[in-house]
Amino acid sequence: MTGAVPRRRGRPARTAADEGPGARERILEAARTEFAERGYDKTTVRGIARAAGVDPALVHHYFGTKDEVFAAAIEVSFEPALVIPAILGQGTDGIGERLARYFIGVWENPTTRGPLLAIIRSALTHEAAAKVLRGFVLRRLLERIAADLDVPDPKFRAELAASHMIGIAILRYVIRVEPLASADPEEIIKMVAPTLQRYLTDPGESSTSSPSGG
Amino acid sequence: MTGAVPRRRGRPARTAADEGPGARERILEAARTEFAERGYDKTTVRGIARAAGVDPALVHHYFGTKDEVFAAAIEVSFEPALVIPAILGQGTDGIGERLARYFIGVWENPTTRGPLLAIIRSALTHEAAAKVLRGFVLRRLLERIAADLDVPDPKFRAELAASHMIGIAILRYVIRVEPLASADPEEIIKMVAPTLQRYLTDPGESSTSSPSGG
Image (cartoon, rainbow over all chains, first blue to last red; front, side, top):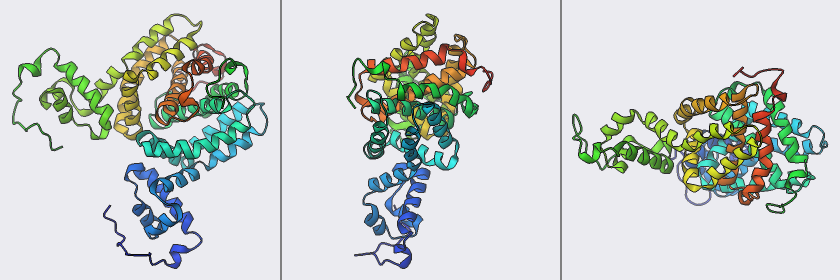
């Protein structure tokens, strides 16, 4: 909290670098790195501003509070998830395998894995971060995915599928329990694909009672 | 680290309370509570000793380092898991449903849920805690479970099943994403049971290549 950037009074003196067309993107990139490396708790708007080379007031100007910067950084990290509706849109045949392959690919790639793990860690340890994840990203993403599914309780089904992939990521990449940690990705995909296929396409097993009507 | 318990030199002056037959159990209970409430990072041997009403040297005497106290506390939290081999021993018919029901029951009960969540949180944020969980508890538990399974790569299969239940716990109880967070436990069991059944009993899909031979 004892920032290297000197405090200024009144409106910040913005420079060309501050307001250049890349400032917003630099702030987002810095926020993503800071949240990933320091965790939700230790990340400050001031620290993000410093890493991005801008005045803290510009961070507030573009994004608002720390929670709102976090939400924006999360959205960037979830960008790979935006292709999920496209994957679903290719039809139900082999949808389980396509999704499993896609998820494992995202998790196998350190560039996309790092930010996702940082989000999960933050959400598990800070209710504020969990709230942002729950309300902001998951709701929107789930709504989009659920719209493409022809099963009862599509959001519930999508969450069951997501829960499996999140659990695998935690055991494989964070706790690194063997043999899962060293298993061939293809072996994981082969086992998991039928599970996702059933959750996302089989209408049979959720018909007698609905958890939410969602 | 500025403990209320005054530092003593040399051997601790042990009292009857210190060495009573319940001292070890009191220390374990205190450790479990401290790790659950403060997290791995902020828990100290000194704090555990204070909560148990014993000298820190007695904690070291019984358990050793902080990591070893953590391992012992984890073992207590994993005691409900010791019935899993018994569940598996009842035969393969309906094993998926029995296990799903058992897991959901453990997670629905706040007394058993709290310590498990604390362990997952610690393991996700501290490599030392992840190492203890990985090496100490999971290995032993997995060996016992794998011995009862008649499938290729039984540990890999058991980990896939565990990953699903851990992921559900995280989305339902920590991030509390809807509709999963409010779903009827029976609805979750109904959907998940066939998945666990397949992982733990269906030899079909892991036959061409083995991730580990485990």
